[in-house]
Length: 320
Length: 222
Image 1 (cartoon, rainbow over the protein chains, first blue to last red):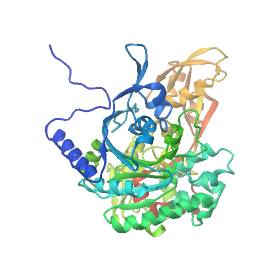
Image 2: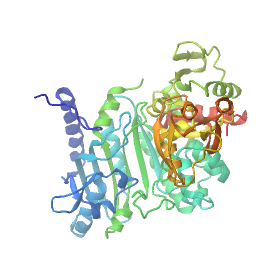
Image 3: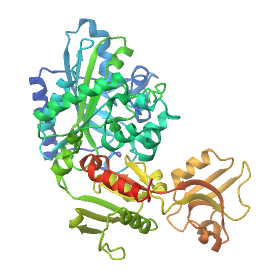
Image 4: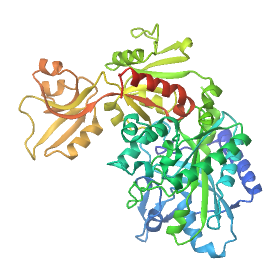
């Protein structure tokens, strides 16, 4: 009998050198995280849909693989580590010694339209830092993120930073802010220009020349982020650093409908990394205190994840 | 902070890769680029070369099929390109769309024989290569349709009675008139769009912004 070796769309098997290479990278990165005081958590691949779905991030509902279990319960395959870990950690916060540092590794499964390079099963390695309320761990998370990326051979990484909900004040006067957010995310000049010159500056250059246009709270956060960025870019010179509020236009915005779980759980500094000329991001993360707040725990939380297969592919591809 | 953001242009020092669309958008695109000061001197539009280099301008031009172009740009093979909004609506990609060209605009329309617009509740056969646009249009229509895909010369389908209707691009309407067909309803306006790869934008921000400024100044895009 001939058996087909074909696999479903969006998944892959690794043999020989490819498998060894991924394990080697994983071991290398895990060693680094352990040296930085991160402790491993092992999370299940299956969860009930109800509590999980309610706290998923942007667009995640439509990407979720769900099915009916043998006992009639509705189950989902893990599509995002952060909400699952937050749900399990929130009730344990009173007995946790803060700050607590965790890392995880494993597959996430998300539906993706069939297209070039679209993976439906992705192997991730990530971290979460849970700290007392008000304590900022963004810099520590960013340093760990950079050091992990630095272990990956190949082209120079590019890290783009932003702030969740940064443009909300600027969009307050717009007739349809949700639609405008999409346009800003695509850097449509006409849409930005119609509202304000500050928004056009964001679309073109990433930040407004006068940060007060963002409102006093956001302007202060932007100032802090600029200071952090200046320090990190002086210290990690092998990275191309960018500050770009348009890149994360819709992330954490109050104008994105939260009722359908469409709103991102990020509510502070956000970042994303790219390698080489490929547009596919190899990892990212940010601050998400609000997610824990929704789960009844008052803490400060920041985390990131890296897609190991994407990371390896991008590092091998190099610059064309 | 702006210095930080713009430093990468010079750090990379790499050439910009521009994807131009073969077909109806090619001439308006080249005309618009030239009006904006991007000379592309010696560009061969009629030859077989799919890749042409312009070292003086630090530029490499790829000539790609309209429907393939967004994929090449999204995956960073080209940093930017020009493609019709009709194609963009079909190819669900993560692309930046800073400007739309003024020249080369047309319409995506429902076409058929005069007086053939379906009565409410009717079921018709509809030919198109714009399957996503057809689904969206039919979701709000009072009639239903069996949609089947055709690759080209879609207007032939209602002309030769293979289908009752078609959804296709209409520029002047001359082809329709020559076949005894009419535009029954305009579905949407279509424009050639400048599309930019996200990573390409970050890497060549200054240069791409200068190009966009040039296109706007020349009043060939908005």
